Image (tube, rainbow, N blue to C red; front, top):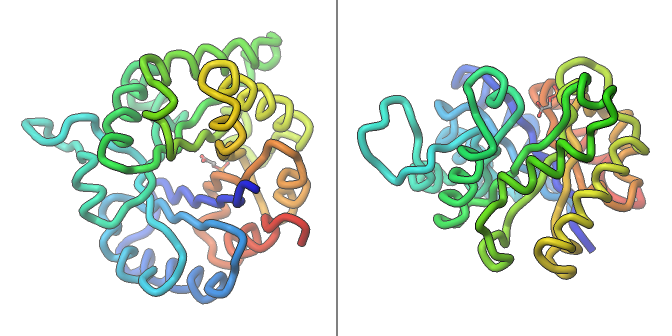
Length: 254
Ligand code: PGA
């Protein structure tokens, strides 16, 4: 019922020529695939180039961050309307690297989600616990707090298009992914959280991605879980072969 979604977070990688080559190769590999949605999230500097590459394919474009104001004296920032203008349909918001290195908070994430949705961008809102929090048995408590604060003051009709990415911080870029069972436990909690706080039908349609050391091999187990609807892929998304293999392996019942 929910179409799997595989999003590639290229982070701070790829010059213009490198980015065009990568997207061209991904497009060749996944051109004829149905039953899976593919989103590329390259750096801001190549968004327009990648938009041109993915024409005449079903691949979609996303950005890695956004500011909440429409325009103004905000040196260095990029507005939702600018992302739309480049052809973006998605935007990653609240990635743990932004929380960790750039002072992103649940409050700024809330503003960014609101601004993105208002302009018709689908936010991929990231949540996840640190290793310390997991070991202290606080995973669910942390996710609950992040969801509550990131989604404060929204009604269900405001958040259509929202995607959630559960990314345990200890699994990002470490090669140590959460097991399918560990991820499913949190995904199920998230789906129920939306059921209780928004509506049953919204929670059933919500796509919840797993992120953290996803590879062509482990996606097969992850995607079998009832509440895992795809992946937000970092390191493995900047290699055309591994990313394409993840996409192929994410098609349910294949
Ligand atoms: P990773 O990154 O796949 O390299 O662990 C995931 C992410 O940061 O979204």
